[in-house]
Amino acid sequence: MLEPVATLVNPGHFDPQNHWYPKVLNATIHPLVHFFLHLSESRIINRYCHLHPKVKPEALREILTYQPKFYLWSGADLMHVTNEDGKRQMVVIENNSCPSGQKSMPLMDEAQEQGGYRLLMERTVKPYLLSKKRMIPGHLAVIYDKNPMETSGYAQAMADIFKESVYLAPFYTNEANPCVQFRDGVLYVRDESGEWQPIRAAFRYLTQRPWNRLPIFSKTHIINPIVTCLAGGRNKMIAAKAYDFFNAELEPAGLEIVTPETIWDVSKEEIPLWVKKLGGQAVIKIPYSNAGQGVFTIVNEQELEDFMQQDFEYKRFIVQSLIGNYHWSSTGSRGKLYHIGTIPNDKGNTFVADLRMMVSATASGIRPLCIYARRASRPLVDQLEPGVPSWDVLGTNLSVKLADNTWDSDTKRLIIMERRDFNKLGLGLDDLIEAYIQTVLSMIAIDKMAESLFNSKQQFRKRLFRSLNDDKTLLDEILI
Image 1 (cartoon, rainbow, N blue to C red):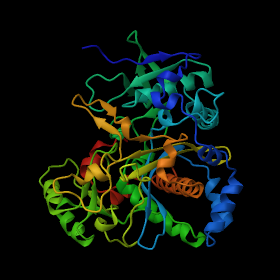
Image 2: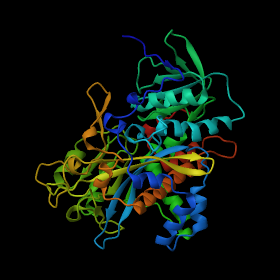
Image 3: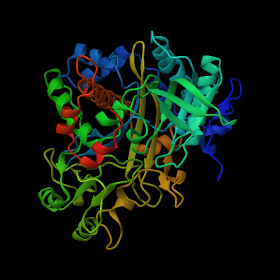
Image 4: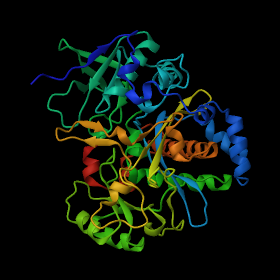
């Protein structure tokens, strides 16, 4: 078996066909989405505060101009929901420290063929690295464990922006002989000739338990650093607590991160009690999984029994109120929330859909980068048919894990921000603004949590982290 190697990506070879889905390549961005992405900060603040008169404009301005210390690039998954009184909201389901999306986003400017790939490198990655006074000698790299279509696009855009060759290196969990390793805190990659090359900075797209391969401390600058995953970007347990802590801070300003009701630190034995408390419908999550893995929707006794019969590596879970159809949603602290869903199709079917909002840090604050949406495979119905898995009606993630541990995407359910597709979502400009602000708030909450995990001497506070997330299996995986 051949050893995996890092391939060298040279400037001047970006080919759009390699980095976008075919249906996106020739798509024209929806005028409303284009308008939103070019809205000034002041206009967003004025509009949002007009619709939310209790929100203080100066507090919202401080939020949108926030400069993250750790969390430079993120993407939130949001659901468009309402309640029995017709109050519509964008609810944060999770925030991701290595979000996908570029391959699903039509170009904002047809003259710029590298789209969001270049924009992220230009306005976020390059300024961040140029601001670092200490940089070890070495190359640039992009490391990944899925999504080669996007990661290769980032590598190509990075090569063009920095005007130098970039190593593109696969780095899978539990790989026998990976082409990425650390020596004395420096990341090295194995090139095609078998030589190990030092890396001064790496853009990383590691999604599967990245803390078991990347250390918290590194002489190589890594974007995003691994602490962002532990603080909530890949850890739903800590994310829930980060949102709760930040909401207390936001309350005087009239702002709030809106999430489903969440119970954390739940042992497997406790789960039936919490499901019962939520009315028999709930969502159970393994806090450290992603790409739709480790999420279990429970709408009846059989689904709960099927869950309880499984064995799990981790010992702690989170339980959330389930957002479904009005007739089968959890009753939580916010009342009964249910999906607005897509505009009915010709057959009268409405589908659950979520929205991915990707943002990144810039010199002027946190700005939107790209947007796409996904729908479930089966329509949202008033009553579920016996034997139909609720995940088929509620699950929107497109990632499909194959038998050989590689990944594919179910692009039939992808909704892109082009002239026809976007209309299926029934979203307006105010909904996009709400999604953007919810994304920024959740990103800042995680960045603040990451900052709190280091003491004044910049040492990782292991005792604090353990008190926040006392799961031995997870703790044993983390590389300090």
